[in-house]
Structure formats: C-alpha cells, structure tokens
Length: 483
Length: 95
Image (cartoon, rainbow over all chains, first blue to last red; front, side, top):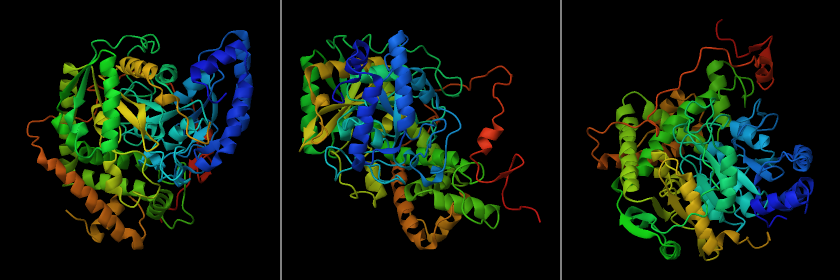
C-alpha cells in the first residue's frame, strides 16, 4: 500500500480495497521497521488508529474528503493539542501544546490521520537536520548523508514511505532543500497563503508552511487542505483559494521560462548542471520558450538573510523565558539567572549563534548598518523578482549546489552550511512561491529542479511540475531498501 | 570584522543567554565569520532604496473590538514550570 500515491490511496479507500485502519497500521509498522532513519520524534499510534476508525466511518457514510483516512505526518513545529510539540529543541522537550495550529486543525477536519510528529532542525534553524536535540535524521537514499533541513524528517519520511505525505515549513529553503535532497516534491507557497497560527515562529516575515509529497498532483491535494485565509494569523492573505487540481493538465505550450544566469555560475556542481539542463530541455519539448535573464541582487541574498532571519529570531525566541512553558533551569538564584540559564541550557548551539548575531544586528549603533541595510537589499532582491516575472512566467534553477552531503561534513562550519542555501533564500526574501521537483540523480543521489513563480501562482507551479512528471518518472523512484 | 570574547559576553547578556565560559572563544570565531558574511552587503549601493520589512506591503488588519478569546488560564498554567493560585512563580525580585 505504501507504494501508492495519495490519489491512488484515496481511490483505494473509496473502492474498499483496504480500510484506513489497515492503511494506518501498515504505515505504523513501517515507521517501527525504519526507526533507524530517526524521522519521527513522536509517533501517535493510538490516536492514529482511533482517527483511522473515524475516517472509515466517514468513508462509509459519504462525508469523506480527499484526505479522509490518509496517513500523514506533521513537522514538529506545528502545535498539536495534547501531543508533545518540541520544535526539535530541548527547550520544548516537555511541552504539550494547549491548542492546534490552524494547519493541524484543517487537516484534522479533512479527516487526515496523523501518524506523528517529524524530526527537524532545532527551531527550524539548519540545513541538514543535524541541529535537532533528537539527533540527526538520515537520508534514505544513503544513510551516511543528511536529508537536508530544516524539514529533514518530513522529507525522509515521505521518501522512505513512512507517511503518505507531510507538512513542512520554509524560511530560507527548509521545504525545498530537503525535498530536493530526498527526491520528493516540496512546495513553499506565497508568504501569507498558509496560516502561521500555531506554527512556532522562527523569522515571521519569511516563515511559510507548505506540502511535501511524492508528486505535484499529491501536493495540489495537500495544499488545497492547508491553504486559506485565517483570522488568527495577522499576515494571512484574504484571497480565494483556487482549485489546485483543476489546472494540472493545462498545456505548457508558449510558457516562458527564465533562467537566471546567477543560478548557473561556478558554485553549481558540474553533474548537477548537466542534470538540470536535461530537465529544462524537457520543457522545451513540451513547448515552453527558454530565455536567460539576469537578477544581479541575488548574490547578496545570503548576507541579507543572515541579518534579517537572526534579527527576527532573536525577538521571537525571547518568549522562551523559563516562566510560562518550556524548559526551566534548576534552582535559579534570581530572575536574571532564571532567564539566562534556562535559555543557555535549553537552546542548542546553532540557535544560540543566531540569537546572538540577531541581537547584535539590532543593538544600538549597528541597527542601520546591518538591519536597515539588509532590508534595503531585500527590496532590491524583491524588485529583481518582480522585473524578471514581468518578462517570463516562471523561473527555473537548481535547489542546491550539490546532492546530499555527509552527516558531520558541515556541522562545525556554520558559514559553509549557510552557503548551501544559496538558491533558495532569495525566494523567501521576496515572498514568492517556489517548488522543488525531482529531476534526476547524480551518483545515485536525487537532484531537485526549482520552479519559481509570481505571487499566488501556486496553481501554475503545480501545473508545470505535474506536466513534467507526466513525461519523466524521477518522482516515482524509491530508495533501495525501502521498496 | 571580528568580535572579542568581551563582545560576545555583552551580546549574550543583552539576549539573556547563558554561554559557558569555555565556549566563548568558539562563539567569537563563529560570529565574526557571520559578520564577515554580512559585510558583503556593502558591495551594493542602496542609497534611496526603501527598506522592505515584509513581503506583503499591507497594513495590519483591524477587527471589531469584541472578546474572541475564551479564558484558557488553567490550560496554559498546566504546562508552566511553577504556578501557585493561578500565578506564575519566579524567584523573589524585591527583598
């Protein structure tokens, strides 16, 4: 059952080939069988089986929706009522959420069966899933390599078929990069498309939740259930949600694709470049026009991001004070000691680095030189996207400079780790949507192609990815040992 | 640009973030590397560019001034480290 797509499983549940309880059991068994990947932090077996029973009742009485009875998993950044919600941190190791995130609420209402909570980089800060308090996640394509991050557990679980699909969040590439490294389809929607309510904040002007699936068609189904206006999120956008499956079969004839030359420079590994060229040729065959363009401000996306994101994180994470919830140090002597030690003992190294540099960038005397300067560069980057997307319909490029790197290879060199996000970060600064689609392999490891669209053009991105997946089968490959 | 151990201690104090003494040097080195990265921004002239704080240039939404939240005090306090009589407890602040 685990080899089927979401759509096939939804059909199987309706035709009575299997029940949601059977399907859920089969995934729970796989989760146990492949525990070595460390993809899950919490497995909610009992609740999953109860919800599967309820889903079977809905399937029988005709009130089922597309996701009813489908076993999914939530990134552990989304608050789940009554279930441990850790955000990959010791700080929240003892935290049971008192409410559901809107995304969780919506997927529960749709009848999706949550199998558990997925591992991630601590507070979504990382590109390898190695900063998690619960240990590194392994990439199912080669267990000595990283799955990417921060939604590494989500990507590994979907790739290894330990969930039909999963939620992720993307602040600087955290859906697309792990999707690329694990050979799945991951979409970061337009900022404001998916509610951030109950999604633990890292950098609020960049954070966005999205679907992680095997195929674009499956991603359309999951996004449909996740997206939409939410009064509880002050930056949620009040625009109607289109039917994402309706346009999947639109022809790509006449589609204008821009290739930013800054994305194909010296930093891109040779094998990756060749694989992407082959992928882009497929779009020519489908009738698209390809054009090289230039986006000169892109090269400063990383420095601008590493001011803005840490600045926002230093403010957001000030809520972890050891007073209201989360970790508290033992025997504090006074209030300052309580704050300082609870935070010092509760946060890991990468989170501390970002709090410190963000605090510095916002401190008196440095605010203009760093924070305002970064915001100005953010404007120039955003203008580059606006100009480019007025010339062409979508942009294409790599997601990552290389395939998955080794566990331990970059963890002691933060700057080198940051540079691995070079192709994904600018998209968050502009706020436009982008997805990663499996586009081949280099030395047996998956390669992702990034497709970037205009604001709220998720339907177009899914259409393009779906058409590509009709003429290629990269998304159907399963890692060896997980068939 | 590089930060000294003193700088790190000062920033850590501003952030109320405990750093072990033995780790200060390694943070100073990492943060200096991050600052070098950030300094690349000066390559680009940004005179007369309007800073962009947010992807959607939108005003905060307004809502009617009515109570929408139920009282969740018991629920929230159930997950607090230390509470008594509905209050969050911290070490004594005033002698």
